[in-house]
Amino acid sequence: MKIYFDSAATTSLDPVVIEEMLKYMKDDYGNPSSTHAFGRRTRAAIDLARKRVAGHINAEPGEIIFTSGGTEADNMAILCSVNDLGITHAITSAIEHHAVLYPLEELAAQGRIKLSIVNVKSDGHIDLDHLKELLATNERSFVSLMHANNELGNLLPIKEVGEICREYNAVFHSDTVQTIAHYNLNVRDIYIHFITCAGHKFHGPKGCGFLYVNNEVKVKPMIRGGAQERSMRAGTENVYGIMGLAKALDLAYENLDEHTAYISGLKDYMISRLEENFPGVRFNGDAKGASLYTVLNVCLPETDKKETLLFNLDIEGISVSGGSACSSGSNVGSHVLTAIGSDPNRPSVRFSFSKNNTREEIDYAIEKLKVIYELPVVA
Ligand SMILES: Cc1ncc(COP(=O)(O)O)c(C=O)c1O
Image (tube, rainbow, N blue to C red; front, top):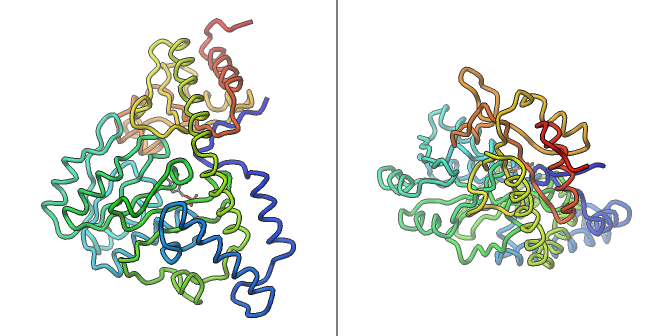
């Protein structure tokens, strides 16, 4: 049995998306900047894809810049804000993705910005009172807080944070890599300047994403060398990537309610099976509260098999992500689990689900975990 419970890392390509991409690999391979018929065909396809993508988040097509994925989009939002918007103070949290933390830390190390880290509570939620305090006592700020945490699943009250940013005239970026295609997001209904997307998190291609830049924000390109993406991101477009991303997003939003209900059901089922079988099991973050329905981070009971747990699951055909908080003196481990004070002596396992998983797979994983923990198993 091969079970894939790592959809927050990446997802399989939907066969319909593959079909769409093949068309642009085999037949419609023109360079969109060429003025001949081949070029015009791909130019028109990209223009239409941009319109569809923008429509899904209620943006204008001109507010979408296709990128090589979530990392580039996060980097661009940050660097452009500092380079072009006169930002000298940034606020982020310790649980952000490294695509956000590393560029901000580097800018701070270069002395170009002052960086403030907003407090995160033990349930993984952002301390909004502290955020207001940081905004009130600093220059005009850039705020980067992710919509859903990729390790814990915790959801940010994005609209409320947007309103706080509005009150303090801050520039607001949210890494929405884990929530686009999983929730309806309406950029006209949220006070927000930048959001980011990666196609491979929703059965689209790797190496393709986008940055949404609100029309009112005037920034310059980060990558220079051509007039592509309305001169905002140079380089020949990743045509099949863009077409695949747009198709994957169409499919996700067409079936959003059905997939949300189905995947939420899988997560709830996993929670109840774990609680039935593993006394003392805990969940990192706010699994039963404001939490992404695709992610469940389980803090299992202590075991002397902690170091080999993921390896043993892998041998049984179960692919999951792991990690534990850094123990004192060690710099390996998850910066997110460390930030929320998860017990470093207990193994933490992230199960992340997609429409392709089943309850039978969850039953199988529970039985294999019981074997590892030497608990009685169903014959
Ligand atoms: C929250 C978050 N931000 C950013 C990224 C980076 O996206 P990409 O792999 O497309 O560069 C990821 C993916 O791992 C992510 O989960």
